[in-house]
Amino acid sequence: MFDLTNLPGDFHENPWPHYADLRENHPVCAQPDGSFILSRHADLDVIYRDTETFISDKRAVFGPKYGVGSPLYEHHTTSLVFNDAPLHTRVRKVMVGAMNPRALAAMEPGLVTLVDDLMDAMAGKDEVELIEDFAGAIPIEVIGNLLGIPRDRRAPLRDWSLAILGALEPQLTDAQMAEGNQAVSDFMAYLRDIIEDRRAHPGDAATDVLTRLIQSGDETGEGLSEIELYQNCIFILNAGHETTTNLIGNALTLLDQHRDKRADLLADPKLITTAVDEFLRLESPNQFGNRLTTRDVEFHGVIIPKGRDIHLSMAAANRDPRVFENPDDLQLDRRPNKHLAFAGGAHTCVGLTLARMEGRIAVERFIARFPDYSLTPGAIRGGRIRFRGYAKLPASLKLS
Ligand code: HEM
Image (cartoon, rainbow, N blue to C red; front, side, top):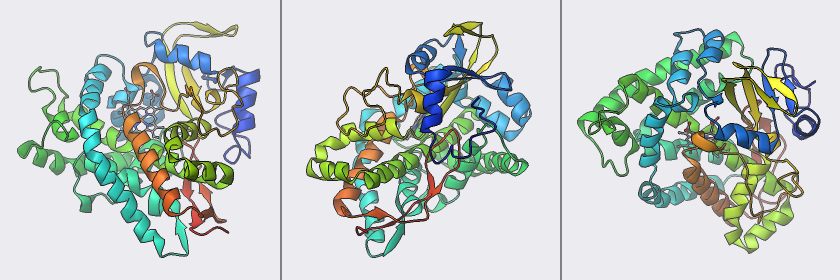
């Protein structure tokens, strides 16, 4: 039986048959540690909508995993994604308000320039590495801009983000645990003068997310405590990082494997809007989420007892043939496309519009500028279970 702590050898290369087996034959798959994997679209949909029965609070899981009081425990149990009301509601309201259409529209021209600058830098090279040179460089600048982090201080953000989110993997080595804890501590120290400086010199709260987070409680008294402010700044800096890098890297890989679809997209650039959602569905950047049961529940005749950790396989659900016709096919104009790459319900990704905008601008401009690019040998997968993407993606900008 599929076991998250003992994966099949070919899992990272080709997880799809394993996900299909889970979804079709073991839709409620018990794990040796007492947790369960659920993988059908309809089941995940029910779970996302019922926040009374399926909670996000992870203290019971993270206590034994990280040790209560450790930096990783403090971080992950304070960030909104692993909380329920009232903390979740309070933080989410501030974040949703901060990512308002005006703030996002204001970011678009800068994003176009950033993407074009990165492509200018690649244009003269025979061989490029699409994660470092492109896909990974975009979100770091976008989120850095979102929080107004000085440009010359963004270098450590990517490694911290990888270390902190990497610590969510089902199994950790001592070194990964130590790196994750160190990253949280370093990040907190790093944010101190950035936050203090912004407190002293506030930006425009309509477009500056950090100013908004800082000022959130000024009128209502229901803002973020100091620790909530720091931990949720870290969360926002991490949330849009590896995920968006994976979206762009996975999209460019799919368009390398499906040259006919690349040609379709070049011929009809308007397809990019539905195409981005199709990339998100087919190669979901975030493959697993979690919830905890607050009562006994039954799915497909199996009782999941109260207090159990549930792994939600969005990657499997996003290829559920009950919802998607020809689910393994890349259909750039797929509509409707009710994928769960951004989850659903109360915790639906706050950054989804920003992520789609980054994906749209990056992929559309990349293929227009380098219509003949091709991946070259040497790709290295990120090697995560929760996140699917590449650590390295070498490419030639001319057709091989
Ligand atoms: C392709 C890129 C992205 C993907 C696939 C993605 C995916 C997700 C998913 C699946 C969740 C829900 C987790 C759960 O409840 O278990 C989530 C939550 C969240 N995401 Fe994203 N995300 C992306 C980009 C971003 C960006 C760019 C930002 C912000 C800059 C962002 C901010 C957030 C926040 C704040 C939450 C927490 C929402 C809540 O708990 O209410 N994400 N994301």
